[in-house]
Image (cartoon, rainbow, N blue to C red; front, side, top):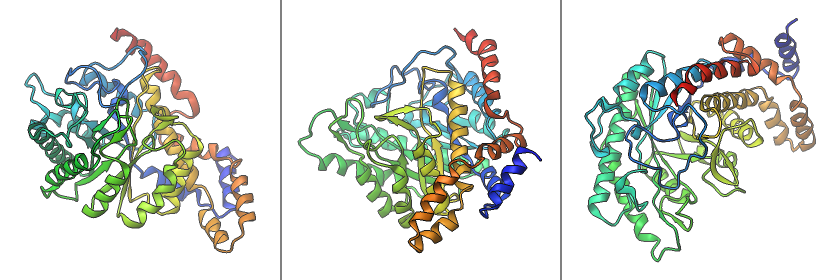
Amino acid sequence: MSRFESAKELYNLYDVDVENALQTLAGIRISMHCWQGDDVCGFENSGSLSGGIAAIGNYPGKARNPEELMADIDKALSLIPGKHKINLHASYAVMNGKPVDRDKLEPRHFQVWIDFAKSRNLGIDFNPTFFSHPKAADNLTLSNPDPAIRHFWVEHGKAARRIAEYCGKTLGIQALNNIWVPDGFKDIPADRYTPRLRLKDSLDEIYAEKLDKKWLADSIEGKVFGLGLESYTVGSHEFYMNYAAKNNILCLLDTGHFHPTEFVSDKIPTLLLFSEKIALHVSRPVRWDSDHVVIFDDELKEIAKELVRCDALNRVFIGLDFFDASINRIAAWVIGMRNMQKALLYALLLPNKTLAELQEKSDFTRILVTMEEFKSMPFADIWDHFCEINNVPVRDAWFNIVGQYEKEVLLKRG
């Protein structure tokens, strides 16, 4: 008997359907963020990062152009089970020598990405880029007091939604368009209300255009603070949560954008009570929003548990959001994506119905016993089998492939 068959029998003793868990996991598309591959640089050559964003490290082999970035994405996806999505920022437009500013972007500037995704059965998610631009130099975009600057960013937001809709329609997979802005102040503001009023009006203008919801989902993403924006963030979680509820769009939870003592996993079931769908950017904060590579830690498992227990896997957009320039960038993608999948599988292999029934009976002793027992169940044997049936390396065998790619490709980039 194989290790998988042995593990499957053990899970069956607890009425856990392993085959159903594997089938469910195979149907979940995780959005792999393009910006891990080049340290959030994009293709605009607009200078250093701004808006509280910083990529730390100088590991060799960073992608320098679309061809290199796509090749690196290909390599990473070849080591990750299943079919997924690519998460793009607007700053990754491919201009072909005919540059336009962000307010004039069109779907054609992303046709190379769309062709890339279509040939690989991938979806695309999208993000307007409100940072690292001369018109965002003071970290005020959609809430800027200057009407001209505000108009520029409103037009960029509109353009991004059209691009995302086009991606969704062309690929036949609904695209998420997520708005995050870096707007805020370093020190205590004299007026907290007016910038948020301007942000609200700008968002109203962006979302006024009615696009096809079959192919486009809209979300907005809050934050506690950023580097250089320590005292006040215009787009706070409370602002966006209320705006999303009132305007029937999605509230995106970035796992690094809250206070260190907050748990995003606890917010998920509450939002699901009032929203048809939610969106996630999964990162790993170390003390705060440091965007470390996602690991198989307790909070990641709790996030996955809530999605499974709430029967919300078809109601969530799951994307990753980290950028670590101190390690091999392809390895970072593979570690993060596989860990997100591991967490989902771990949650799918729990006796969730039984645990819920025990809670209704107030049998908290048995709940604790069962939860602790499942920590030592042969979960890894099920995960290895999932990798095998998806024709990707088992355990850390993928790392040798990344190492060879580093020698043959990455180190030759200079």
